[in-house]
Length: 548
Picture 1 (cartoon, rainbow, N blue to C red):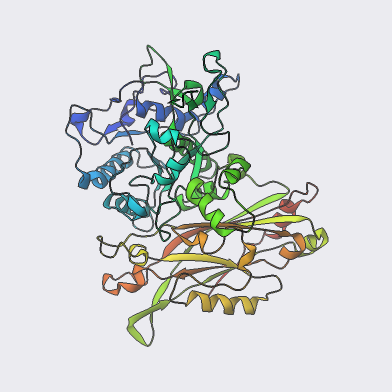
Picture 2 (picture 1 turned 135 degrees about the horizontal axis):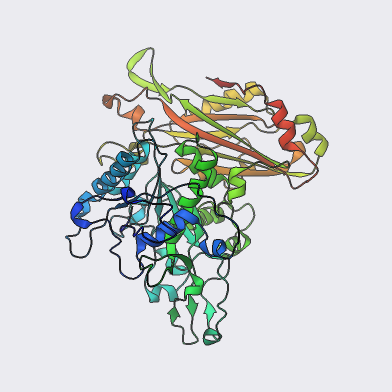
C-alpha cells in the first residue's frame, strides 16, 4: 500500500499483473506518481525479490514464491491530500480492494506511509487503532500488517547521530499493537570511491541506521517498537562535518523509469519494511497454514542483537534497563530466515497455535467477571539427555504472539487496560518446581488484579525480564543456563491478564475466545547433541494441552 507501482519493469512483470495494480480512488490512477525512481516501485522490487544485488551477482535460478498486489493509497500531487481523520479509512479501503481482487490468496500487507502527527509518547491514534482493528479482524480472519517505523530526514539530526534517533519518536500509525513495525540498522561497508576517501561512515557496521526512529521517549506502558530491524542504509560524514548520501550505502531495487534507468536505490525504514515483507512471505510460503500471529512470532523469535548493537547501548549483563533500551531502539533485533524456517539437530523449535477464553462470568454473579482458562503445556523434554550434558550451555527461548481488539472509540485510551481487550502472559516452572506447585503459583498470578506481577520465583533467570517483555501483544524472552538446570523446566503456562473485554461488560465480550501462537526453542552450541531427532521421536504422539 503505497504510491502505486509501475509494473512494466521486466523484473516485476512475473510478480504483478495489471489486475493487481489497484487504487483507492480512480481519479488517482494506479501508476507510481512519486518523483525520481518511484517509492512504490522500489518497495515492490525488494518485497518481491529481497536482496536484488545478491540475485544479480548469482547465476542461479530465482524461485518465485509469492506475488505482488499494489494498492495506491496516496493521492498524486495534483489531487487534494487525504484529511487526517480519514487515514484509517483509506487504509481499510486499500486492504478491502486487495482482498476483493485476491479472495483465495494469503495476503501480507506492507505500508511505509507514516506521519509525525499524533505519534507522541506511543499513545494510540485513530489511525493506529484502525490498523489494530484491521489486524484483529473479527477474531478469526486476522491480517499480518507490516509498517515502517518512520525516518529522520534532515541533515542536522544526522549530524547528531545517534542521539537524535533516540529523541525522534516512531511515527503514526506504527504505535499499533498488532502490526509488525520495522526499524532500520545497517551493515553497509565503507564506500570504495577515492572521491570520498576522507569521509567516514555515520554509523558503524551493525549499528542503528542513521535514518531510523525509536521509541525511547515513549511512556513505559506502551508497546515495544520497532519489533525488528532490517537493513536501512548508512550515510557519510565529510571532514567539514556535513553529511551526505551515497548509493553504495543504500539498497538496490527496481526503478519506475525502467526504460531509462532499470535500477535505483532505496533506503531508510521503507527499505527495511519491504525486506520484512519479503521475509514474512518466505515464512508463509514454507508454512501456508501458519496464522498471521505465528508469522509475526517467527520473525521476532528468530531475531537477535549483534555485538555492535549491544556495544552502542553499552549493555551490561543482567542490567534490565540496558535491555529495555535495546528493545526500544532495535526491537528484538535482526531476524534470521534459516532460524525462522528450520530446526537443526542442535536446535529445535516447537510451535503451538491455540485458542483460549480469557474471561468468564462468575457463577455466583452474572454481573461480575473473572479469569477463566489457563493453558499448561507439558513438553516432552529429553530430561536424561540434558542431565548427561551437565554444564554444557543451553538456551531456551519463548515467544507468545496474539492480537488484541482495540477498545471501542477513544474512551480511556490513555489507560492500556482500556485499550487492549485482553492480555496474555507466559511462564515456566523453576528448577525443581513440581507440577502441582507450578499450577498453584500460576493460578495466583493469573488472578492478580494488576498486570505487573512481582515474580520472586526465578524471574532473575530471564535475560529481558518479565516487566520489560510485558508490553504490547507479543512477548519474547530467553534463558541461558546449563543443560542440567533446564532438565526439569518443561512446564509452560499461558494465562490471561486484565483487559476491556472483562472490564466493559456492557459491550458483551466478556466470554470471547481469542487465538495465540506460542513458540518454544531449545538450542545448544554442542554439535554432537541430536536434540531435534530425540524430541521429534518423543512427540509422535500429540502434546496434550491442559486447561484450568
